[in-house]
Length: 420
Image 1 (cartoon, rainbow, N blue to C red):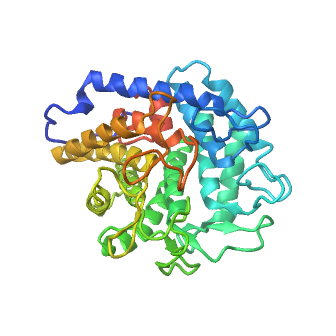
Image 2 (cartoon, one colour; image 1 turned 90 degrees about the vertical axis):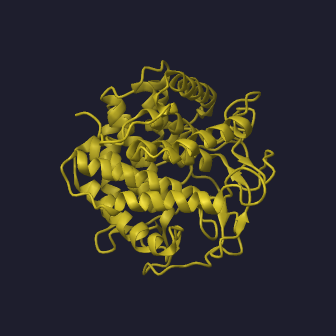
C-alpha cells in the first residue's frame, strides 16, 4: 500500500524535493553506519564507543544501545547495505541471550555485572520491541521468537489498560512497581507501538499509541502551552519538581525537554498518517498539537542564551536549566521539521529544516574523528556534562532517512515496501 499523502500546496524549491539533498542525506547516513560497525561487542550485542570510534576495553554490552543498533542496521540491511544482516543477527542473539533475564523474563538494562541495576524499565523494553520488529521485517528468522517474547512482556507487565499508558518500572522479579510514571518511556512506546501495528498488522497497537498521546500530550502538554510534562507519580499526577536536584540526568532530567516536544510532534503525525491510511478515525487535534509542540520547542529552546542551538532543558518559568546542546535534539528537530513540511506545505518548516541542518553541519558533524559530537556546551564546543563518547547512531541515522520517507507506514515497513 502506498504511503499516506495529503493535498498540499506546492513547496517552492524545497530541499525535500532536491536530488542533491537526498544524496547528501544518503552519504551522511552511510558515513554514520560505517562508524558504528565498531560498536559490535565481541561477547554480546553492542556497546558505547568513545569519541574516536573505539570500543573501550571495559565496555559492557548495553541493552538500549544493542536494541537501537539492531533497529538501525536492520533498516540499512533492507536498503541494501552490505554487512548489515550479520550485525542484525548479532543484536538479536544478544537480546535473546545475555541481555535477557532467563529466570524472570524481560530485559536488563545491560549485561549483568556486579553493582548494576537489575530493574526492568519500560524505556528499555520499548526499544527491544522496536528492534525485534525491524529485525523481523528485515528477514531475520530468529527475530520472530524475540518479537513474540517482547510483545508478551509488554502485554502482561507494562501495558495498563486501566491507565491507558505504560507502567514505568519493576523490580527484577516484577513484584515491586515503581511509584513513578514517565513521559519519555511512553513516548518511545508510542514509536514502538506504531511499528508493531504496521509489522504485525494489528490495529490495537495504533489504538494504544493514540491512548498514550491523548493522555500525555493532549491532556497535559496542550493546556501547558505545549511544554511537555515528563514526570508523574503512580497516579499520573504531574511531578514538576522531580529531579530538581539532578537536572542533568540522562533520561529523567528536571523540567521540560524541548527535544522530546519535537519527537512527540513527529510521532503525532505518524500516528495520524497511520490511522488515515487504515481508514481509522484520526482526531483533528493531532495536527494542531503537533504544530503546537514544534512551536513551543523552537520558541523556548532555540538561541535563547545568546548562542545558536537548542538547550537541553528549561524550567516551568521558561528559563534554560541545562544549556548543553544534545545531538539527538537537533536530529529530532530536523526530522520533525521535514515531517511537518510534508504534512502542511508551510514554508516556515522549510526554513527551520534548513536551519537545523546548517547547525548540524557546522557544529555537530565531526569530520575528523567520525560520527557527530553527542553534546556541545552553551558555546557550541564539545562537552561531556551529560553524555560522553559517541554512543548513539539511532537519532542521527533516522534523521537522514525520515525526510525521504512517507508519514506512514513506519520506517521498517516503508523501507521493506521499497519507499527508500
